[in-house]
Amino acid sequence: MNLNKVFLIGNLTADPELRTTPGGQSVTSFSIATNRMWTDKSGARQEEVEYHNVVVWGRQAEIVSQ
Image 1 (cartoon, rainbow, N blue to C red):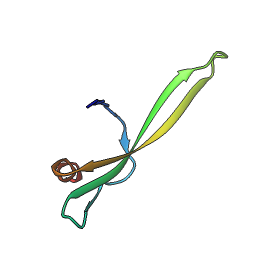
Image 2 (tube, helix red, strand yellow):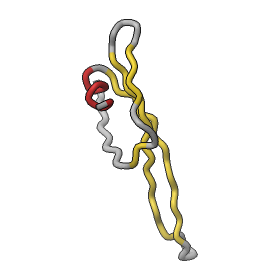
Image 3 (cartoon, rainbow, N blue to C red):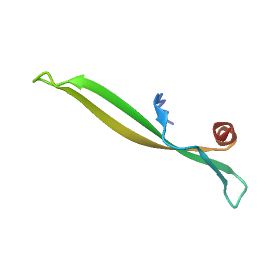
Image 4 (cartoon, rainbow, N blue to C red):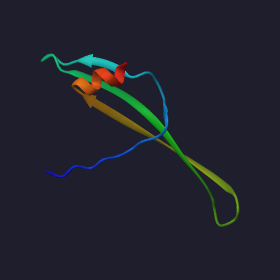
């Protein structure tokens, strides 16, 4: 099994939403906004924002929702 680890450092766009599947498993969804700034070749300052939708399952979902 391959495992990739990602660290996202940004701002929450809304409060995390906790829900439960019909089987009783917890699921939390939330979105994080990250941005980067750079200076282009002409010297103008540029900024780009990306939004990341994250879904967490099980016990971690309960922890994240708190």
